[in-house]
Image (tube, rainbow, N blue to C red; front, top):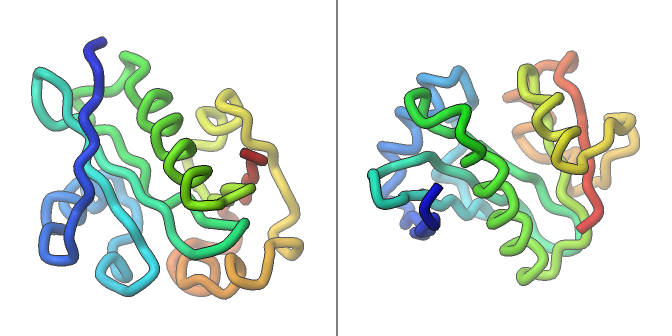
Length: 145
């Protein structure tokens, strides 16, 4: 795998992200709201996927990590996740939280542990991801950075 290039997406540049998320059946309703930072990942062959971080402070929400369907299975998702975690650390995050319906095994392999959703920090628990976009049955995972 070649090195990944990371490009921050401006609010007006979210169409490709929204399309990739919709194709993966991930939430798209709140992408343009404040407090979210999304990035695009490319390598020498082109677009690989997208990811994002939501919130401020020591507890943040990992949002919308998606590898394009034709690029899956080559370890790119783990590399993308590591880059997002590094950015979260640089921004002052001490923990990343996430909800998932389908990717819990991937995140567990990458150091995330299942947690009680009721114990989520208030800022994370108040996010639209928690309150409206993800079902109550979604797995809640946390990783200390």
